[in-house]
Image 1: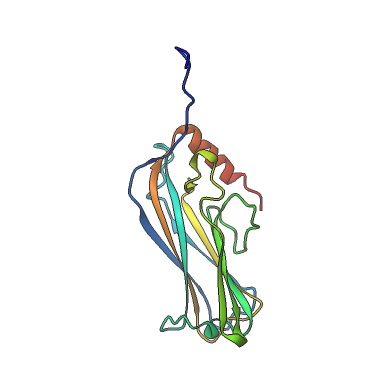
Image 2: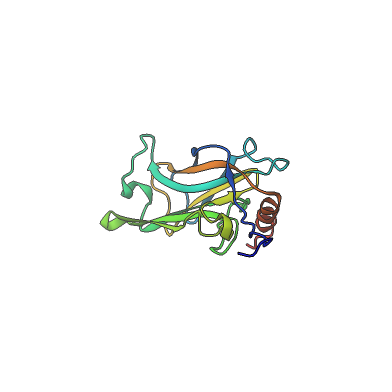
Length: 194
């Protein structure tokens, strides 16, 4: 190394808290027609702060599917026939629809595919929170908006005779970002294409 050579600057998030969990449930009413979409928001206003560069780092997202008043997980009660139940978590409001997979606001998505006649289900996670983060911050999805939005819906078949509950559990932490990183994430988030 030459004397006087500058070290490259590496942008990094500094953790302000340990990991904690936020949860949200979307309820799709019983007998809802195929392709119904229901959305809900998780308020992040207490965690995100523009002035201090404080953001939320989403580390992982888990989902639970339940049905009826006793919250059962019996697949044949979820839908009236063959189909799927999908969810998405995004940092911009999708307006009650699903985002396309290349949208930069998409934090996580997945589905539960149901073969009702065989009482068989296959759960898939299409996208994990670390897939779309900027290179220097790719260990988590950084959120600088004051809300996360969850959308869930049934595809191919109506909901069964009981309400369907789709619950997400988001593991996250509060982080401090440098001004350049915070601004880059804010610009990327607001410039996302649908």
